[in-house]
Length: 317
Image 1 (cartoon, rainbow, N blue to C red):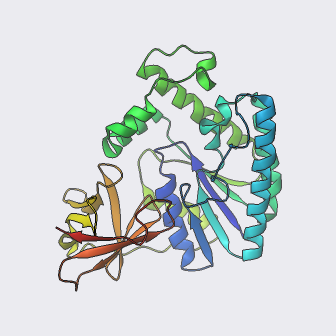
Image 2 (cartoon, rainbow, N blue to C red; image 1 turned 135 degrees about the vertical axis):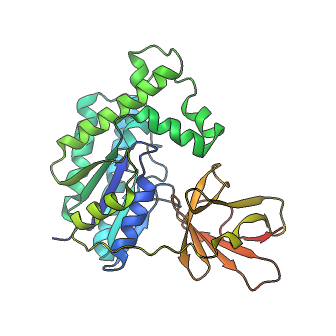
């Protein structure tokens, strides 16, 4: 039976978006499939996730449980009726560090919640992929260099007395890294209990082609080698300004890694050329369509992402 749902999950920084997007493209050569980034507009699970009640009270969590299970049930029916494969990321195990470990639930209640979700989606024959890194601190420290000080400050901010810090004193950055490791351990613990088709991959070495091949073939599809399309890519680099506005978008070329990147979201966000003067942001469902025949080089933004730049034009300055 075909896997109608592929869930790619794990903690932040382990490569969920990059991996799920690439697997989506592999399967798209061979089957009807759609990809849902965890931050796409009105994600069927992530939109207003755990907002029905206060997560710090049992009554509030009961409301959340009912609403979230309804969401999963509706999501399952949408996939079944659409008769397509869906691949999405960061909406299953990732809820542990976002909400559940900080909630009023104990370990048994959390475990029961995931088992109930699995019962709901089982008719889709789900394939659950858990990406992890044994040294999660190293993974976050590397990500800070790419994502910048703002994201670093968000992750390392002083926590409330929840989750890991219910029983551990906050003593600075070291305790935050310890909490991140604890969260990943809890994800792995839940993952190990799941009775379904599943795959666990250590992404420390960032051998993305290998991981994508393994997931694609495990899902029952052929893996296709992608062509290198770097020719004349530097002509797209420069600073672009929003038409009729002040916002700017910088695009640069990394000569060492031979890739083009933007500093719009984070200081270092790789982009990929996909043909016909079009690029995509590797970790986000965002496309840039360039018009090289215009008086000035320009691009138009599109994609399934909830932000203000959809259908906006940026002109090179």
